[in-house]
Length: 66
Length: 441
Image (cartoon, rainbow over all chains, first blue to last red; front, side, top):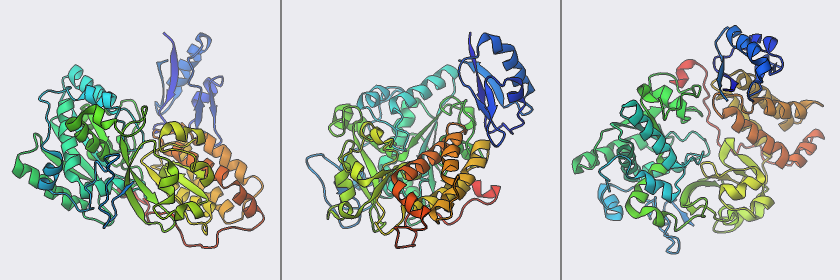
């Protein structure tokens, strides 16, 4: 089942770890907050997506059903 | 057109309006209310009213225009599947500073709203009901509601008790998740979705939040049926709605009109004055859109028509400032207010709105730098869709519409000129913005 990324902008504190681990789908805006590609995650990037989710210090990033 | 300002007891037999507001503009007590509308038509079973609301095509009148039947179904389904009683909240926290229709409705026809609250509660099987309002700036709405609730208790009209709750004077107080947060004992600031409040709201229970005007329409559909409701309005957007109209003099006039009504008549007013002077119309308040008056004159009051210019009906606010005011100065003041009213929880809103407001002020006072306008446009794009609530989206829409509609004025300002001849602020802006966390409670 395909998944997509969802960021909780209230929890997000702009640490930026997600963008380092998954630059293909997450970039940072000029204030350091993530701009997340909300499309289904390609299977080739699933590992990196999970790493990005795990790396978030505030648990703001999650995977949900696409 | 029916106007509810004092001394205008007019009606329109062709449209049957007003439906909600009493003719004559006098507050309606229990006896006058039941003489006009009859008693509450309880259905006897949860769920029974919902197909009628769907057939009527009633949508939320708080601004989002979500189908009411679908919302009630979602709450009832959640309550049944989770075996928990639902909660119903009447939302009278009319936070748009330019709007006055909900306060007027609660002041003049409190029983119609309370009828709707009881009937909605029955429809979703709720055991608790709350009416949430602002302390009104001009009228003691709270006292009127306490009196109405006492009248209903004496008449044995209500099946469940209604609790009154006061919203803090914040722009976001009426936002659905902020409202639930506040009623749960916290600050009136938005929370992340999911969960939706229809699934898990107050106390974790499935929660129905409906604007007070929506509940008043619901109470009448329960009495007269979907066919009656559809006698006015358009096929896709049936019924009537309350509008707050502010013309050059700035006085709010509350008018109940059919959806699909030509804007020309609403903007012009009975004496046609608005038509002569208006340069632009603000449709939908401070989360709405500026539209050049010439374009607005050809549109009708429904989302299908307004979509052509990127506008929406919203909560029915129509504002035509006098020609001696500068649209950029007015917008900059309102956007500064919106930036201060950000709950400050989401990075893009916290960072973007104050920058947008400051840049817009630079444009308004003729001190813009080469990159200022580009910055505003980029930031408006950056904040859109990136908050837990729609505050950044609505603010960005308002700002972009101002830069487009007042494009000629922007050019004038670049040359150090301004077409506004009066510096007196026109758009209503609340004086006190939030400073500490206490201000949100």
